[in-house]
Image (tube, rainbow, N blue to C red):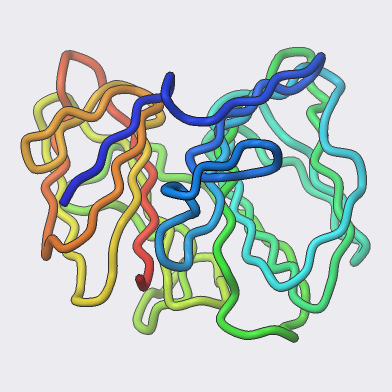
Length: 235
């Protein structure tokens, strides 16, 4: 089954500095049919105005992955980490036993990002933070693994869950394949362009929940490169 939800039909919140869109129930947006997918709990599509952001606040026992689509975000936390993650980069924060952090847009233009929360496999991990680059060149055949706790995934940022965050750019007309093992599902969001997933069109900023299917083929439609981010998760 492939369940597609458009950017216009997901939850939303807006104030003076944040324009947030929620693929799953979050904060004041609640839909009992959209409480996450397996271990994936949150996927927020946020636009943060210049010199604004999320002031210091706590988390625990959650894997929080941020992909910056445009602009940059500056991270600071109670462990003493400080880093600037710019467009095309990914950061992972394992909240573990507890961490206080801020995510600020210190740039002169808006920052656009995906914020993804995945349930940890067990409480009590040591908190930590790390970052890496998103693939700059279009992928060939398969999406790149960006963050993972699956056995055998090397070179990716570590998360404490048998899940993986994958992504990449796809040339117009090209396709990539993704196998989904038994007992698992996938959630895909199109960052740029438009794709088809097993023949079903998924427009820009839309999400597609995939369950009960052993493999998907993602094809870039139109005449521009598409960019997708996908979470493969136990159900």
